[in-house]
Amino acid sequence: MVDIAIWNPIVFNDVKRLLECKYSGDASFNDTIIVVGYNVANTSPAAFRNSHPGKKIIVYNLEQFYPGSRWFNERAIDWFRMADEIWDYDLCNIDFLRYHGYGNIKYHPMEFCDKLAIDMRAERDIDVLFYGAPTNRRLSAMQKFMGTLQYKYACIFGTGISGHMLEEFLARTKILVNIHADERMTRQEQVRMFIPVSSGMCVVSETSPVNEFGKSIVECDLANFTPTLEMLLRTDEWKRVADNARDVYRQHCENRKYR
Image (cartoon, rainbow, N blue to C red; front, side):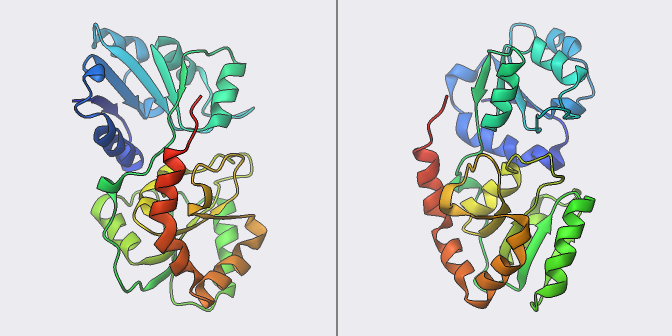
């Protein structure tokens, strides 16, 4: 059984579930513990190491690193220095960390996982859904398309929604929207999207330097969100994207080249 230490489960519980699905029963992880949410851990890296003698410790980074990133701080550096291995979900993050001298890094993006798929409703009464932290940039973008689109529902939630409540909203949704929190945070928000895509949902995401979902999602610039959403809803093209999402994402993950 893979051992996972998780902080901030509201945000990272889906990652924990993915790791359990992938590595449970893998004997090579018997003496390993994977740390998720290290940046909000209620313990120090040294104390964590001392409380797990003999364990290989993997620190899984799921934050965005770029010049000036608030996440790349002394706390993160202490955890990375202590770790036997660092995992990261994004190739741009990996390039950043290698530039800063880290060599013990492995590439672990989110993946297709049929076991975590949500049972989508045949009839979906939410046209457009966004969930996540309501930053000024996101609110400004959503005010534009919510004020223009003549469709039934558009919803926004804070980061507190999770579990069965979130799954119920997702099951009712035609299009899930993904928008970067601010202009510097351009990494693809994979944690938000991998279960909806695995479930057969149409996702419209703001473009990122690396697209870890391939053609299973619709990527577009923020300036083109309104016409893109309008076209998908007016023509029912969202259904075609949703119907193909699972298989396209599965194939994309199978063909992904790791480094």
